[in-house]
Every structure is written in C-alpha cells, then in structure tokens.
Length: 298
Length: 309
Image 1: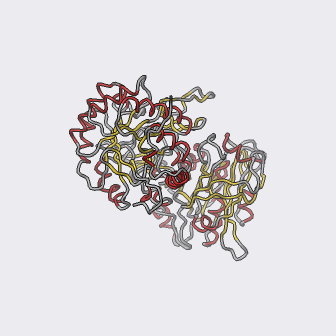
Image 2 (image 1 turned 90 degrees about the vertical axis):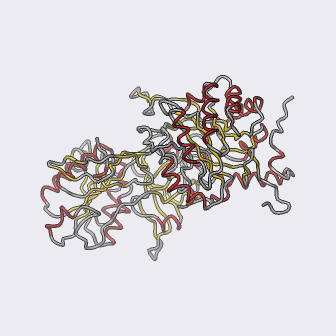
Image 3 (image 1 turned 90 degrees about the horizontal axis):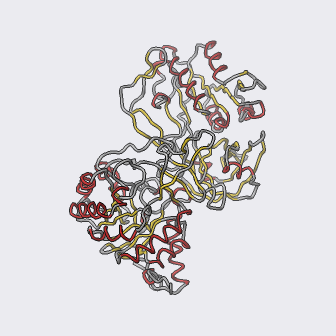
C-alpha cells in the first residue's frame, strides 16, 4: 500500500461525463492486481472531504513492457466525480493503493475456476474454462486489466458489455483492442442487443456447452441476475462490489456487506442454500471481489 | 527520549505518560493492523482502538456513512470483535510497537460495561480504558449514560471499581452543560476526559424522501465540528481540573494547537485518518517543529495558556 501525491499524466475524454485519468507511479503499478482499486482525493479542500474508490482499469507499460503507471476510468455520478472531470494533466491528487482483494485468475490450463468450479467442470475433461466477463456501465472499469492478465496466461476470454446507450459504453474498445470477442447490449438498443447485458450472456451459454467461469461488476440488479444464471448452471462467479466507503483500507467499517460464513451450494433450480450464519465484512478489505455464492443477495 | 535541543513532546495524562500528545481516535483506526502498512505506529502517542464490548457486535445495517459539508455522518453501530478476540488476536500485534494502547469500551447496561472492563483488566500492554458513554448509534446504553449526570457518575464508578487501569471518560457534546457531565465523571472516579464524541445529525435523500443512513440519524465528525469541540473543551476546562484529551475536527497542526491552548493535554485525531492516513504522523512532526520555531522546550508549556481577558 502506497500513499502518494501524484500529478495526472493524461486525461482522455470518452463519452459525455466519461473520462480516463492516467497516473505515473511505478510502486503502485508494480504491486496492483486486476480487481484492486485506489482511493483518490477529489479536492484540496475539506468539501468534498473523502477520497473516492476507483478501480484500476489498465496498466501503463514502458517499451520493455514493465508497468510504470495505471489508468482509472470515471463516470460523473456526483460532486466528487464532477470535480475530477475538471482536472487537467499536471493537476495533483492524493492516491492510496493498491487496495482490496483482486480477482482470482485460474492458472493456465487448469480446468476449473477458483475454488468450487470443479463440480461443474469435472465431467468435462481437461478443457480450459472460458473466462466470461460481464459488465454494466462504469462497472466495466476493472475488466481491461483483468482480460489482459487472463490473455497473458493463455486463457480464452469473452466479454459482455452493457450500458444505457451506445455512447455510454465503457471499455468495449479496450477489450476489443486486446483481441477479446465483445458482445454489446444497450438499454435503448442504440448498439448491439436491445436490453440488459444478461440477455446476450444467456444466449451465449445456451449455445455453448463448455466449461466457463464468470466475472461481473456493475449495477446490483445486473450482478444479481448474473449470480442467478451462475447458480442455475453451476458456474463459478466472482463479483466485484461497490459500497459507500470513507477510508478504503478497512478502518471505518462503512462499506460492509453481509457475507455467509460458508459457501452456499447450488440447490435445485438456482436457489442458494445455506444453513450457516452470516456476518458483515468490509467491501474494501475482504472485497471488493467476492465469490458470489457467499454473498447474501436477498 | 528527546535529543538535546529538540522539544519534549512527552505529556502526562494523570499517571499515564505518552511519548507525544497525538492519539488516534477510537473507531477511526481499527485495531492498528491496516494503518501499520503505511505508517509507523511506534511514532504515535497512543492508539484508541475500536469500541469494544464483551461479545462480538455485528453492527448496523448499511448504509452506514454519508458525506456532509466538511464532514461525514456515520452509524457503524459499534461493530467490533469483542473483548476476547481483541485480547487474543489484536492486542499482541499492538504490543509490539510500544505505543500506548487505549481500550475504548462500551455496553448496553452497567453490567455489560463492568463485564468488558473486568475482562480487559490486567491485560499486558493496555495503557488505559476509555469509557464510551457517548455513541449516538446504538439503541440502548451508550449515549444515554452520557447525557444524565447521575448515570454518568454511576457507570464511571462501576467501571472504576471493576478495573485497575487509568480511566478516561469520553463525553458527548449533545448536552446543555458539558461541565455538569464532566464533574459527574470526575465524581465517579475518572482520571481524564475525552472531549468530544460525534454529534447527532441526519440528512435526507430528496428523491426517495428517505434517510441517507439506515438508522435515520448518525454521528457527525470531521473538520465541520472543530468549533464545537473547541468550545466543549473550553467549558470542560472551566468545570474540572482533570486532564483533557481534545477531539473533534483535527486535521493537523493548526487545529491541534488550539486544543492545547484551551487546556487539552493531548489530542485525538479521528476522521482525518480516513481521508489522509498519514496525517497523525505529520502532526507529530509538525508539533515538534512548531515548538522549536516558537522556542518552547516542551509541548506542556503550551497547555492551558489561553488568554481571555
């Protein structure tokens, strides 16, 4: 964990209210893993007071391929992100990171996802599970970094990217640029599938009877729908959650989520079954990435 | 030990000597493990740990925080690991740094306060107890003990008799006359007073017309409460001679100095740990430099030097 005052290296404007900030910081770049985040200040003032959590979107590499920086992708949702939109290269921000538990990425050639996929995959031989990334809105932020790491391990990757409109789609171009097949869904039908991103995901799973591992981040109803699909099909799912957060490092206890003490096993038609208890865990510290079967979705 | 020529930052809170007057406030620092990754805990004057109860406490339903102008509201609900797990899993880690460890404790009944105090009594590496009778976020106990002088005295005396540790009592600003509560805590056997805890507050989401916190209201902290905290320390100083730990809205040097001038022997930094996690260590450095610049041999020379004629 590093706490650094960093000058913004680059600002790339995307759609309306969407932009990418680039930072040069070798210690954070060297340490961070896909799914982790940084806490960044939005003003050198007491209002707004708190730093904002932002997923690391891409690593910036030098010519030798060594990571020296990283990007974050931001969508304006409130005062803090609106202030960030005003920032220009050279402006300084406080950046703390990398933080949180990253996605667990299978080793190359393994036939199951992280803990528990084997029940689903055991009868399918040594076939490598396809890594299916399902994202909505600014929830797409951590996936380019994740896809890059998966591809580096030789894993097959496919992405399902949802947004309100065609121009609000985030990270789809980054993913395509990495060579990832991307299926797009928009709420208004202005690009790709007309409807939610779980539509094309379900269609794809219907037509492909091969082992798969799911990863998702986005609006909670979308992630819940992906969870139900994963449970019904016995597929492992890692979920990246977001919660109101003051510190990002586990001391304020604001960002808690209820987590079952043990994994809920699929029971019947996709119903989670656990007799165990639950407790609040910190999204920033025990997450933001969780095994979907341990989350209390009700 | 201070080198020749460098100002002496040591302070005494009753019989307790701290290496410097900067304590991290309860509820803003966990049990130290997380922040130890970026700051040197041995450089702090003290660490007040997250409020402990006898049993594990799950805490309140989210949402638990909301940002407010110059501050934040929280309603954590005193989620904590419980005294047993604290002693077994958290205190051994904290002991390694040689920094004073202050166990903030709370209960829903006097018996629960006694229970946690007894359980912690005699634990190696504990410097003091801080009695939380001022948390606004639990349904029973907590702040109710802190707003009625008779109950304040009663719970303070009960814990005083249950523990051999120095006893600091953390007061709420949510009263008409904090001096009355300060005297009540003193009568009950308090060794020092922590002034102040958070103030009750709330905000409303105008679209849903619902409260922004699950518990409707919560505790306000951050820079916004500084003037209230300073005033409460001023009133407390007038009411009692007990040592005071000044708390509320401290971001750094300029705020901390005001508390010392008003009579606080040490300060606690809280909410700033959330948005500037190295602020506490910077404050230690800045206090030393300020004393040097102002030719003070020790920080104690500044305490209670308020001029007000």
